[in-house]
Image (cartoon, rainbow, N blue to C red):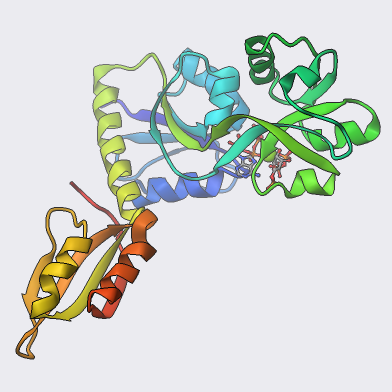
Length: 285
Ligand SMILES: Nc1ncnc2c1ncn2[C@@H]1O[C@H](COP(=O)(O)OP(=O)(O)OP(=O)(O)O)[C@@H](O)[C@H]1O
Ligand SMILES: O=P(O)(O)OC[C@H]1O[C@H](OP(=O)(O)OP(=O)(O)O)[C@H](O)[C@@H]1O
Ligand SMILES: [Mg+2]
């Protein structure tokens, strides 16, 4: 039986969360130190540990079948590679930044300027879309230093908290794209491998839904139950169970992380007591 070859970042910002999601979907890997390839013990998967920046080419060539990779890298180097799932970690944005003291109204201000970046294709696409001509300086790391040493008038790089820009006396002036880790797929994939990939994707979706939801249990007098049900979304409809104490019930439901605090406030306002909130490991719908 053939194995699905999945690439993950060998080391860096994506590695830990990538390995965690594989573990959470039940793929257990014996990863000896400095191993570049490892087979899962209990699933037809082989994991390849690679540089994030090299993965798009491996996907294009079909050397690996799928990958967990930063979306920004695919946009830069992976034209035509399909993303099948956004994974919700390593969120960042690719931005234009200029020295704090520089004047910047819009992208036209980059006309004729020198821009330092590790993402030349992404910047060029953005400039072309806006009819701006600028000179790109490709640097592989520490891009934020470029304006300070007189190498560039602006930079285009990844921003997350903004602290690297701040420390280098730069300000973010334009966002070219937003990125997060994604599951990407090679265009060359046999039916057998596609079936393995479908199983993996289904499991990932169950894990992500679980991560984005909370299980809530609460007690309430029976005359308040309908009001409480009205503020609970639930997967189907909330579970209502009688308590040992007459006239009281326990209500169980699932709440999305995004609306969590608003729902809790509404539950309290509608007479809920003893509210318990539990994490959900997986949600299989
Ligand atoms: N500060 C950040 N906050 C959140 N996500 C980030 C941040 N910096 C980078 N990322 C995301 O993580 C990915 C990997 O970044 P990292 O710096 O670990 O590797 P890299 O140097 O870009 O790649 P390589 O593995 O080729 O050395 C980036 O492509 C981006 O999607
Ligand atoms: O907005 P912030 O939270 O400060 O994050 C942004 C910084 O993080 C990344 O660098 P990283 O630390 O990955 O170093 P690298 O250049 O060696 O990849 C990115 O290239 C920025 O420099
Ligand atoms: Mg980095």
